[in-house]
Amino acid sequence: MVKSTDIKAVKGKVEWPTSDFSRVPYEIFFDQDFYELEMKQVFQGPTWNYLAHSCEIPNEGDFVTNWIGDTNIIVNRTANGDIHAFKNSCSHRGTRIVDEIRGNSTRHVCPYHLWTFNLEGSLASVPLEKGIKGKGGMPPCFKKENHNLRKLRVETIGGMIFATFSEETEPLVDYLGPHCESQISRLLDQRTPKVTGYMRQMIEGNWKLYNENVRDPYHASLLHLFQVSFGIQQPTMKGGIKMDKDTKNTWNHSILSDDDTTSSSDLAAVYEGTDKYDPNIKLADPAIANVPLDLDDGYKTTLLSMFPTSVLAQVDNTYAIRHLRPKGPGKVELNITYLGFEEDTEEQAFGKKLTANFIGPSGYISMEDGEALRLEQDGLKMRAGDYSVLEMGGIGEIADTDYLSQEISIRGFWSYYHKLMGFESQ
Amino acid sequence: MKKNDLQIKVERFLFDYADCLNEKRYEDFPSFFKEDNCHYEVQSKENEDLGLTTPIMGCYSHGMIRDRVAQLINNTLTYRRLNLRHFISNIRIDEGKTEIDLKANFQVMQSDLEGVSELYLVGRYEDKLILDHNELKLISKRVILDSFAIPNMLAVPV
Ligand code: FES
Ligand SMILES: [Fe+2]
View 1 (cartoon, rainbow over the protein chains, first blue to last red):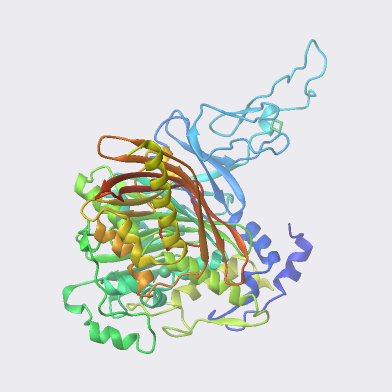
View 2 (cartoon, each protein chain N blue to C red):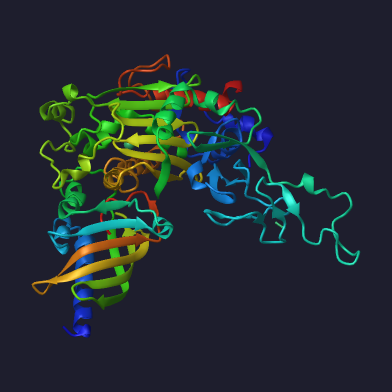
């Protein structure tokens, strides 16, 4: 862990040469010191972090364990329906208490000396607290109420459960902003979500590279040729990005209407000189591309990126919550919770099974991101002292756009990250 | 066919299947499946145990199986060039009236272009085969992954 006296020295390792964040120092992606500082400033700091969807813990005692940065958290439901979250580390000698990903339990018992915690994370009992026959036991000054698990603040929106370590964090809706609020409601409140599958992908890249990736519609039609060929996202498509007041959260969306479908000869011009675009590509079985959208509001993709590690995504007719678990500066695990709805007809449910092929580690649309980030991490490690370039869509002011080929929302991410990490007071 | 002969035939079928993938002959991959009736699914052990049905890869027609390898054949996909090698073991068959149930374990090692090898995937196959003019064809292949935290990506069938 970084000592506070060293924090200044760590931050002094890099410079941010432009105030519009069109240059980002490469060390931020591979230096262990920055990673450790992030665990403190970002993940233990005033941020809301996704833990689970409430449909995963419908009953009393249902729990899920998940990660906020490097910290494992238990989130569970109590008898009165409330949701509580606390650190999965015993208040006695630090042991991990729950060693499962999900389950049901009326209490949490530490395996080592059987200290028992209730569903609010409070210490309920200590074996041999009073000793045996007047011998041993805890000293009179030992008070159970001083030894609860580290509890987190919890709030939910659209069933998504978020937690924060900090008392300073503003209310969740203010933190997320109006676009997140309305899109979460559009995607999750109109029907009753249910989990139909999980996917996990180990990406050999820094967790912030993934944050850049989901705020980067510029790459969507260039790296992911599958979705260009089948009209899910094209470089000429309508759409845009909108951010919250801090520019940390992005709503990135594209809309396809019949009149702006690009002709394949126009598209061929965009990809001229590359061998990626094949205008003759056709699906042998087009069923996968013909699944109708559940919602008739015309959005082909909606990507809500919520600082620091969560994404709610509608890509074509797929609905998923993505969550990042950083595993050191060079690695991040992407956890995807794939959603259906209780109201889905059999046909709609099968449609979602087909479109699952678009996303995840084997997704026609998204699998290439894992590879792009691996290559990016591999390449940028050689560039200490240098900076990445974020100029697409314009430099200077960080503002919403009504076009897609831009990196402005990536600069928005850095602007907030820079502040949260305390670089400003450098 | 005698049980022992069928066992040998099925093993040979699996090893040919593995070679097709190891040697990157993706255009041959669909021919292991029965054209008018076949499924191919890659699922995580996590989902399988929870009864969740969304697959990692799901092809529910011969056309979808051909589409799974199309981007690999026409080279429009950005993915890591690795050499993969399948090791298949614990092969056992149960012969039904019309179908042969096949279970096997597998392990796939990956070797990068500089020759560094590591474990890529571990899991099991749950297949259904039929004899079509004395040739084995898959009508259903389910690949269930113990290692469902997929390293990097899974671009090729397993
Ligand atoms: S470490 Fe948990 S009870 Fe002792
Ligand atoms: Fe992408």
